[in-house]
Image 1 (tube, rainbow, N blue to C red):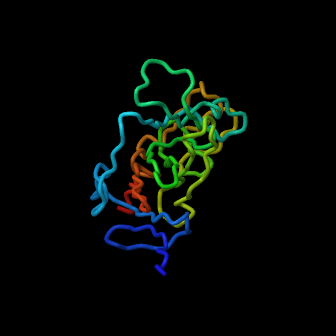
Image 2 (cartoon, rainbow, N blue to C red):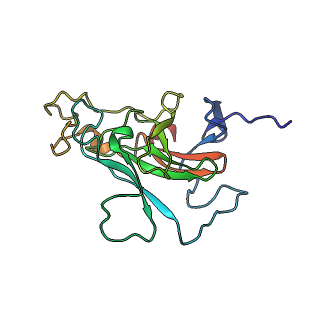
Image 3 (tube, rainbow, N blue to C red):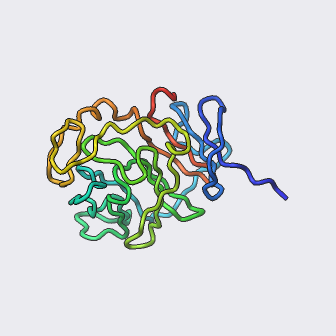
Amino acid sequence: MKKKQSPSVVVNSGLSKPIKNIGGIILLWVFSSYSLAAPPPGQAAQSCSTDFRLASSIQVNGNTQAAGSTGAAVNSLVVFDYSANGVSGTPLSAVPVGQVGSVWGMSYDTRRQKVYSSAFLKRHSGFGPGGVGAIYQFNPTVTQPSASLLIDLAAAGVDVGTDSRVPTNGIVDDPNELPAAVTDPSWDSAAFDQVGKMSLGGHCCQRRQFYIMGNEPEAA
């Protein structure tokens, strides 16, 4: 009987530490030297027909986790046909931003048929319920899916930085406070020079391996 391999986060030159099991997926923490445009060594690239669907992320202004948020119901993760054009009123599948917050990196797991999205620091757009190290998952075949947390890398011990925002109190009177109202402005001052330096970047899912780009400079 083949021994089950323990999932791990790999940091720099093969250094690793075990993290919790997430359904047999091996998490690989990657820095600069790995190209996400190519498949991992020894694995052939996958192809598909011209009849397929695309998923995209949308960042929404404000703190969608705050009480009374007017932006929490706005669509953040949307799925649409590759051949679609023009203005589409209803996407094939959509996840509201209140479930994921600001996300950017996306990949599709053909084995589990899940779309993964990772937290991303976007100025004026708050993080989701999983925080700065979250990777979420959802079923793209459902019209109104519920996103769930795949893993919180910060809780697993990975240094992904710290969110500089202060709690929302209803009135934006702090330079690092985000509004609850989606139409209200904010300074979000500290986030200005943190974009691309904390939280998560892009990622790639290949079979049972998950390659994640880290943005925290001290870990590179």
